[in-house]
Length: 394
Ligand code: UDP
Image (cartoon, rainbow, N blue to C red):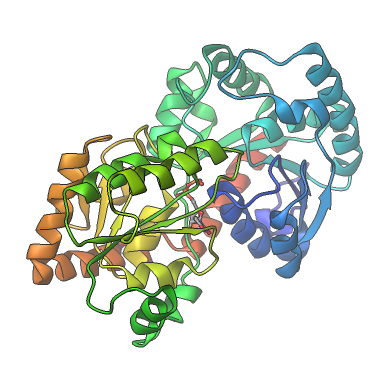
């Protein structure tokens, strides 16, 4: 392969999910920026396909079969899953021949792409958006993923230094890694108007003068919805917006949160909104954005989005989050799973609105400069150049 720039290379992005998680929303921006050169292959159908097509991105679906049911926190896959993986790898390899590089956007996609790349003789890049550590992943899964990357990945693009460090601690080669933080599209934040707060609050039936804390994330124990509920119990009169859905089947956990809000006598001030596509407006309508993950968050797009909405963000001090927020300057950090600390931080922001607004303004400026989608796409382009030029050299 000759040394061409990333903007000229044909890229086959591969993602195992059909739903719109953070990894998929990030890929949506990335694939859009690569325009005609990009094609996305999804290993499950769903709203992600519709969203890609709406942006004019070429997208195809090739369902995963038994491999789709393999859990990342369980042991190694069954024989049936491996047989399906081989079959899907052949299909992906056929498609890969029309491209210069395979770009895996998730761990399952990387397993498939690694095999397909071997068959099609194409380099494979893994955009690593997970912290490869227990209990997110089983021990067997972590070791297998890092070793597979060492032998089959031409490069690994990690979404934070925390993600990169976990990869190396799992046995992955540091030399493979390029860190590129997530970037968020500023357009919907720029479209917010002075009327947004009133309009959103009216539509949600929220009192105009209510103090509102909002959290955004799919329902999963590690996203920490229970921590927000416990903190809210210490904050009489404060309303909460809990935004997100059980994307990967955690419906019992979601129902338990509704039940807990009732038990705590807060059903009238906890508003479960389900999955929404108007995140910037909802954030702007809140007074504080809370990020409550109880395990290290690989990056935390919602943290950046809260900053871009010009709202003070209280987030968990773990994973990639301290790379986004500088404590006390551009946001507040609290220990994971510490409801009293979260409540105290929210109370402090309520009692000191001028200081909270100044911190939010500094956060917004930092997010605009460092975590916007153009910065991310340019950095991914440069990382791809470096990775693929190295492949061409050896
Ligand atoms: N999100 C959304 N609608 C919702 C809840 C969340 O579009 O109802 C988006 C949110 O704005 C963010 C992404 O989902 O861009 C979640 O990304 P994050 O990195 O916070 O978490 P992940 O899902 O990757 O674990």
